[in-house]
Amino acid sequence: MKITLTGSLGNISKPLATELVQAGHTVTLISSNADKAAEIKKLGAIPAIGSVDDIAFLTNAFKGADTIYTMIPNNFAAANLRAYIGGVGKNYTEAIKASGIKKVVNLSSIGAHIDGGTGPISGIHDVEQTYKQLDGVAIKHLRPAFFYTNLLANIEMIKHLGFLGANYGHNSRIVFVHPNDIAEVASAELQSDFSGTSIRYISSDERTTNEVASILGAAIGKPDLKWVDFTDEQNLQGLLQAGLPPEIARNYVEMGTAVRNGILWEDYDKHEHTHGKTKLTDFAVDFAKVFNS
Image (cartoon, rainbow, N blue to C red):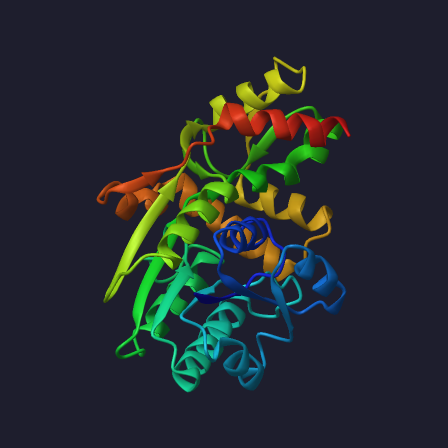
């Protein structure tokens, strides 16, 4: 099969491309960074260098593929994050129409059933809605949970303040997933035969915030590590002090509020979901390696 992937050499797209190449498929990997071309070729994939803002480029990159994988790249410079995410979704939609693609696996998110109030996930909701314009195209929306790798952003907090925290609320539930587990599911879906539009939830583990602190603390040699609850304003100021742009910080605080309220998990709890193999205790080993490096 000919398969085109967005996402460059990210935490999902790189292992996804590797698995598909090893399975014998012809894989084109889209990246906005020309410096990544050599590494993409090393994987055995074909680099397509261009911008997700360029519909003509996307159309050409998609054309001739049997199936494609779409995801929205991060953009910390976005003046309006929801509008940026939704705009890329519109670009993908136009390119899919123009290229004649008939099968799409789309990286969505847990909580994408909610229209607003979920930070960056609100934009992912808009992408799912835009894809409804695609007549005669089979679409599989993957809705993964909270990425383990997001926890790496808390390393400096632990080192300098001695605790772990966010505005998620006391002992709140968090549903986690590992990018490798997402890549495994995405690979299977890209190689499968499906029709219509459907959703597949993916998670690897479920923990409370206190359990997160306990497990990560044990892994890094700080068994007394505690989770501290922040107010929304405290969380916002902390993110701004860490150097995040105001728009990104505001969206992350809003997503944290959605975690605290439990609304992100409501639709997930109503559906069957794929259980990945990587548990938080497994990820804690990698977390410790980064923490101690």
